[in-house]
Image 1 (cartoon, rainbow, N blue to C red):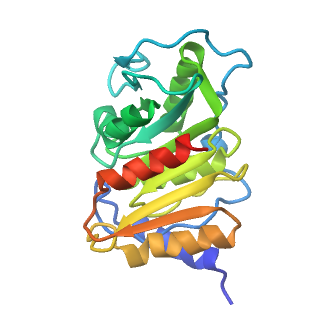
Image 2 (image 1 turned 120 degrees about the vertical axis):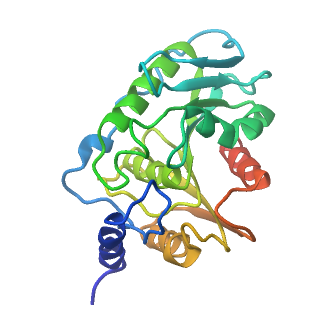
Length: 259
């Protein structure tokens, strides 16, 4: 009898062959990463033992890590706790850092949370249909720069994303549970495989009328597979298409800040 993970893996192999800028429907990939290989997902950046002193300047700035497709750092006008919670926000296919920031900015400002929004090197994130590589490296470098300049709460670091960004957030988050305490996945397609580490809590939302990544082929398979693997999953379905309502984002960011 094939396991749930094997069944999901077979679905992913078929669906990845028809990727089209992240907009074609895809079946979920394996619920978990392989136990060998794919170690390009592992991130090295960590908050220092002695974080930077003093509140960071509010506003949005580029980190200057790439000549094109840079990463943006956003500090809320009224920062919350010191050190700050941090959300790494990943855009959907065809998007950029501005789209990633726009996904969570309003909720982050409301809850006093810093946001790091990188851009993918290509039309979508590298592990969506391939291996972890330049995109994971940019996220790692961007995090190292943020930790150097912003006091970040090590217990409140999340990776978030929408659509392909949600899939990538699940892959990176599950591979780096020692760094990310929470994963916020809004309308994911599947989980890109990678060796897993730690036990991050997971928030997943999905529209029941999603025609891009139909819910029966995606989140309704991903969620029980993650729960079967022992992860703490908070799941929200809502009436709507391939989008994420502001109130759902607000709930997810509040869930991060609340610890």
